[in-house]
Length: 223
Image 1: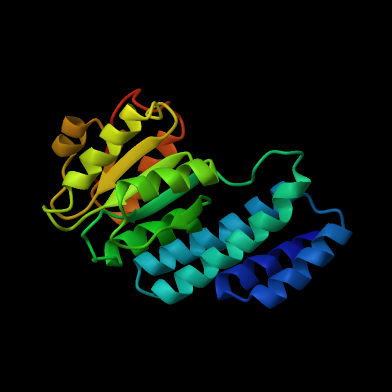
Image 2 (image 1 turned 180 degrees about the horizontal axis):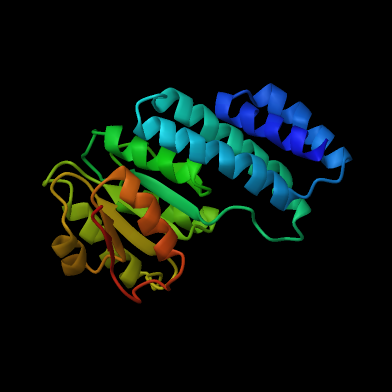
């Protein structure tokens, strides 16, 4: 019976059916199924399937986003039951640099991070450095991710890192950057903590960033 409920939860998350998932979570808790089992045996399995099917063009971004929202629903529900330990891998504040209105790449990264267990606060486009910092402070974030497709906007990535240093906050946040004109060399030049070339490699980069302290090393993911 427990395996059946977990399988039904997996299918609900895969289908993006939030109402059914809510009902199944009630049943799972009544049966004494642990939060860890719900996350691993239902949530992670569903998202792994969605990720594979997305890469194989069997599902598309809307389905991926619905699955990510269901996973967030599950994590929000079970986190208070885990003795103060968050079910999320980490918290990310993400947005496009000031002056940049190109949000497709940024939105893909935000979705991939959300689907893979990060709590993501998406600030959208044209985000000033102070808004990144203020939101990271308010949300107690782990990582600040800045995207840019315009060379005229990438300056604000450097400005963000400089401002964190000036405000004595550089050791609080890992800063990751990406986008069309951005490179690992530029990330090193401005003192960022992470760089990824694609939305897929951004997940691996973010997970590696959670294993280090800010400014400890530069994590580059090009695959």
